[in-house]
Image (cartoon, rainbow, N blue to C red; front, side, top):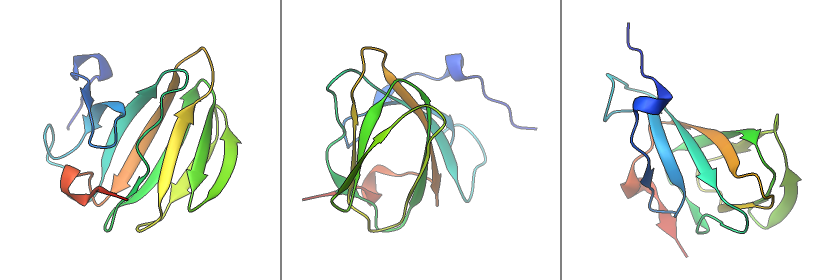
Length: 119
């Protein structure tokens, strides 16, 4: 059994500018096909607009509110929302509340810095 506790994972800043904790990925578990991380953005903080050639992502919002941009379409997002980000889709998420925007990010194949591309 592979078990990781969120609080045992050291936060770091990804290539897109979000602060994440890798919950399960190739760096801390025998993960092969997917990864799971928790990301946090403060009020007004946004990821840098980017896309992934290989990874399909799903964001699941836990706390706070935000604005999600996906290939030019913008929508407000809140806890309980799940967002599908297909490979190749340009995307950016921004925190819009005093409560930090906290969300889970699932990637398949697993997230890698090298699969993040900018304008």
